Length: 74
Image (tube, rainbow, N blue to C red; front, side, top):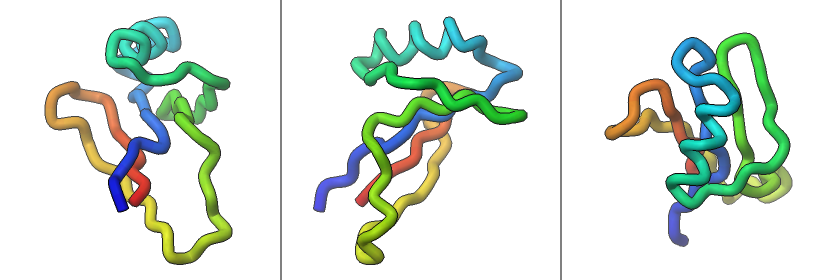
């Protein structure tokens, strides 16, 4: 199975919502509803599927952009 980005997460101390949205557009990601927590702005790329236990999600830090994490599905 190919690995795909399920969510892109931005550190609130480093990115405003507008800066995060601009980054998403520049890098060909979707902008759907923003989910903001105490520390992060999260943009889901598709709805997570928590029903299939064989599917795995994990979070990695971006190698190229400080303050950005990716939730990977696969």
